[in-house]
Amino acid sequence: MKTISTLKNGFIPHLFFLTALVLLIPAPSFAQVKHSVNVTNYKFTPSELQIQVGDTVEWKNTQGFHNVNGTKTAFPSNPESFGNSLGSGWTYKFVFKTAGKYDYHCDPHIGAGMVGKIEVKETGGNDDGKYILTINFTGMTPHVGQNLQLAVIEKSSGIEIQRVSATAAADFLLSVYGIATGKSYNVDFFADHNKNGVYNAPPADHAWRIELNNVMGDTTLNFQHNTSFTDIKWITTSISELSRSSFNMYPNPATNKVTIETSGLPAFDLNVSIYDISGKLMSVTSKSFNDKTEVDIQRLTNGIYFIELGTNDKKTVFKLIKQ
Image (tube, rainbow, N blue to C red; front, side, top):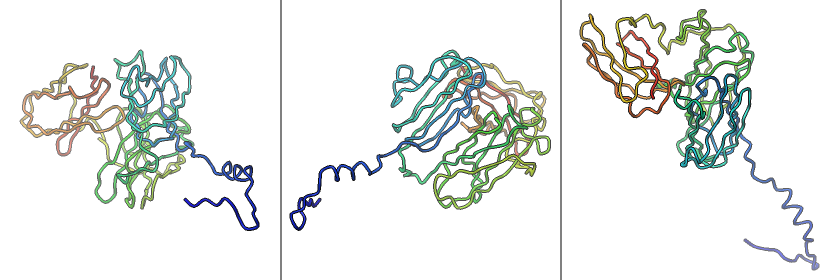
């Protein structure tokens, strides 16, 4: 770099003037995106996040006596420590300044599956061409306390990028990682208005679709509650389609494997899909089903999962506790 120490007429810039110029140059800032996690009895919602360096995660305890423990004492592989003390009704924020993968849990409720994961990527380093979609929900008062599930689906391929869920508040945020430059998506979501635990077409449940076209980077969409519903159809419409009483799943809770059996049904092909508590697909296998079959769950971390049994056009869902 060329350094100018003198100018014509022998003028030498004053040191205080140069220092002032340096002070006017803005320092790097970590303030970027805030991600919200709802803390209720036995779960963090969403339980997994993908964020960038400098992003803030805010945990808000709305139910029960819990804490966030992401310390290096509990998880030595975490790049840095974070966490708070046990209590109720608290809000805890942490700015992630180091890229890497983080684990955390609630100390007294690990056995109940109250765990979470955060992947922090370098700021501006979208080497994979993927970005964060944030949906800002407002005016959701009719659905406060209800389960809200959201899926981001690429229009051209029909591939589901990610599915997340949350307990709805009047105003809250959900973030999804994985949208790509130049791609277009349907953002489909519903509130379990009739509180039966599954999706039913409106007006039983309230469902909407937002279109996101030609992604250019990290994107924020604003949604205000309305009654212009859409039948999104991407989740099982009714567990009665494939009679739950025709199946028996045991043991539950389970550690290494579960057995699914039936009687009185002819042999048929069955898809067995496992979803975590946030709705993320963990595995799917196809089996020729006759009397009973075993499902290996050794690789799953402790927590709550949903096992979906499906044929070509019928499905049913079981809740599983892995311990």
